[in-house]
Length: 312
Image (cartoon, rainbow, N blue to C red; front, side, top):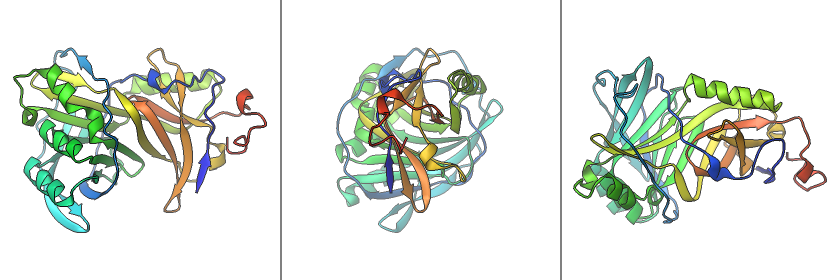
């Protein structure tokens, strides 16, 4: 069941989803995670990657020693095999759950499954940060088979065709002397830092918007030593699912928005859909950044009388 939300611009929300920017991530406690393969068709479009100048030691580098890794399973057509390790580590006062894929085992499973596999990292806990970690070589292998990486936190799902990371362009920026297997690709879903949440709340208040879902940050970084490349934009729409809280009337969802560098919001294409009896905002976006789902009591001028007005 889908409720289509019109692509509109009004009340300070612009319709350019590429205006997003990547902001810092936060983290919290989590629980065990899984990897799952299924079947999917993925785009092989390229994207623009933005080099990031290595920063001095930050809150991430001030992490405590990770707890001993726990093996997690990869399921292929219902067959389970331990092919990743989950660890818990502190980043400042936060806790991060990292799931590191085993290159060799993932490659073997990709070979068995053929093209269009989905690799899903599952974390049904209420963790603030889930960090899916793969090597550049694994990402390359996945892209070559049109595979998709999917990260689920219970409330949020990030579906990313591996080809959209464009690991060859990333590797060129990191340095031709670095092998793909030595590049760490980190794909995160996280609660934003408190100051970023405050900006989102302030922008919503100023525009008389109601935040239906708390802000969520999507981030991809590729690194080797102190060389870091941030993947912030895609050449094809990437799908995100954000759960609508119980008790919220889905017809009152206006749109999902992305936070811009200047603190404003931009509307992103949004559809409300029901999956297994639960409503989700299905978002298609071209950037990593901070996203939120809002309701506005105002009637949008460009949708007045439009077939989608009732859905909005």
